[in-house]
Structures are given as C-alpha cells and as structure tokens.
Image 1 (cartoon, rainbow, N blue to C red):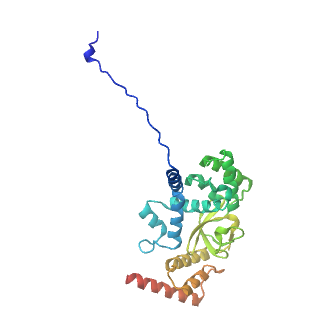
Image 2 (tube, one colour):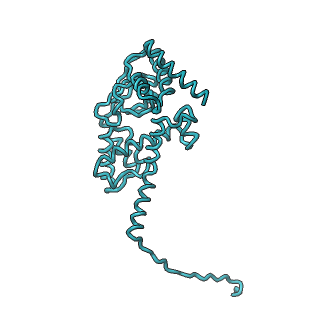
Length: 277
C-alpha cells in the first residue's frame, strides 16, 4: 500500500478570465497599429527606393547594394524584392475595391512583379475572389499569376549587357524614362532588370527595344553608364542635371568630343570634392 504522506497532491485552481472589451478609441488604435505592421514591407520598399533614387548612400558607400548589405543586412535580391513589392502595392492602391484588402506580406506581392500594372490589378482581384474576399496567400497569388503568364507568354531573348531603349507605352511606372537607354543586368522569364544611368528597374519585355549594338559598343555604353552614375546627384545644379539626363537618352554608342570634355570635367570636380572632404 502506498503511504498517503508520500503521495503528491496537486491543487488545481480554475479561475475565470474576464474579457475586457476595447473602447472605440482603443479599437481604432488597434486597427491603425495592425495596419502599420501589415504595411511594414511596403514602407521599407518605398524608403529603399528613395534611398536608391536619390543616392543618399553615396557619402559612405559606392553602390546601393553595398549600402543595403552593410546597413540593413539585405542582399541585392532582398533589397529589390522590397522595392518592387512597394511599386506593386502602389499600383493596387489605385483601385478603390482594394482599399481594405491589400497585401500584408512581401511574399503575396512577389509573383505579381512579373506582370504589367493592369495585369497586377486583375491578378489581385482574382486572388482575393479565390480567397473568399480575404487577403490571399502567396500560393494563391502565384497560381493566378502563373495562369496569366501562360496565356500571354512571350520568350525572353535579351542577353546580359545588351543595350536597350525604354518604351513607356501605357506603363505609368516608366514615366519620365521613355527614350532612355538601359543595360540589361538580369534576365527573367517575362522581364529584365535593367540599369539606367541613375538606377536599376524591372521592366517588362514589351517595354524594351534592343539597339542591336555590337559587343564593343555595349561595353562602351556600360562605361558611360558607370561614369554618369558616379557623378549624378540631385544636389547638382539643375543645368548640370539636365546635361547628364540628356546623356541618358543618347541613341548612339559614343560621346561627342564636347560631351566627353564636359563629363570629364564633372568627374574631375567630384574627385576634387571627395579628396578635400
């Protein structure tokens, strides 16, 4: 027989938990804070895009990629995933029916970066419908996007380092970039990542037109791109900015003697400033 004194007794106390309702103000604060959490990836992408486009990293880092890795721990791929996701969400916000049903995570948006703005809106609308009127999962969005791409598939024949012209057509995200030349830095199934003289962008195939330059001419334009990127800054005098922007729309694979002289002078000025702090 067991000794009662050696038995371990456990007293279980059940207490009721009173559920406290939120006041109207608290409920409003909760919804506001939840929305901020959900939009965190969007705000990060918007901020990264501005840091890149204004080259606000230039005082400490030579490239945007190095800056993101050092400052935020983001590799090149992650940085541009957030930037591209912010562009998509901006586009979705233009549709009144999406006001209360917007993406809550970058993974839900990533598949749509391969689509054109109108297709992105159509894809999200279909994904929300399949999710029963709620925010769809990344898998649902991916499946919808895959069906859209299969119905409009166009083979990507562009090559890395190829020089192309930007065609705006009906894409508002490319406003101001029409006629600019760009250098292909990555080739995707239905788009290319291209480098302009002032940053990198993801561009659909229908918005690119090859210049069909020879390899030596492509190398020359790569060099010109690097040189312009190094000296361009929003803090420059407007006339100087306009000059550099005009070089970004050249339809030839060389600089004239005068253009070369002016660009060299700007490079010299930048080097002098950096040397003297």
